[in-house]
Image (tube, rainbow, N blue to C red; front, top):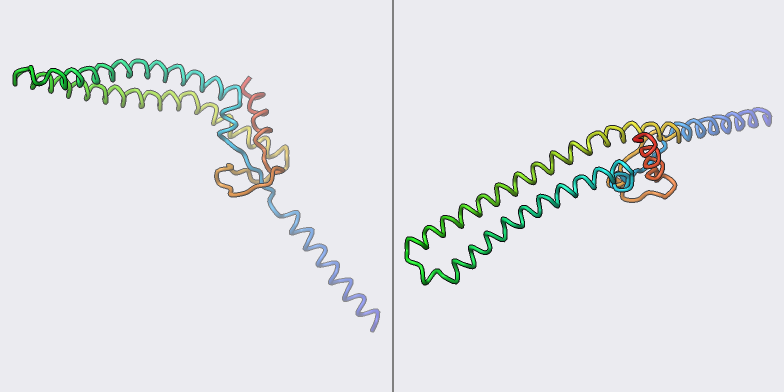
Length: 173
């Protein structure tokens, strides 16, 4: 009887141990990456950001001149509207509308070109980044890596941002 109960307890203990080990080993390990930080701190990301900022500053300077012309015309109309005859007021109003429309069109064109430029510079980086994330995950034995924006809380031990940044810098040289 004693021998049977010991055998049963041993069997139960064995199965519990085996299932616990199997369930622990089968649990996926998770890593978290701050993609924005990788783009902001990687050498390729910094270079792309500098190129885009230079183009953005160029657009901003051009648009600022256009905006100043619109504002100057508005001020002129406010100051001199009483002195102008009806025809001149209408001409100036049409000119102001035209300048505002041209400004909006140029602003939209600049925004579109910036989106295109961003895609041109960031798409190759993002493609390499995807491969780098896979490599880092395999090297660290992580089965799932998710962006930090999708996580409410994570322990620092699962943060793989620095490793991914270093690997991306190495890959993009």
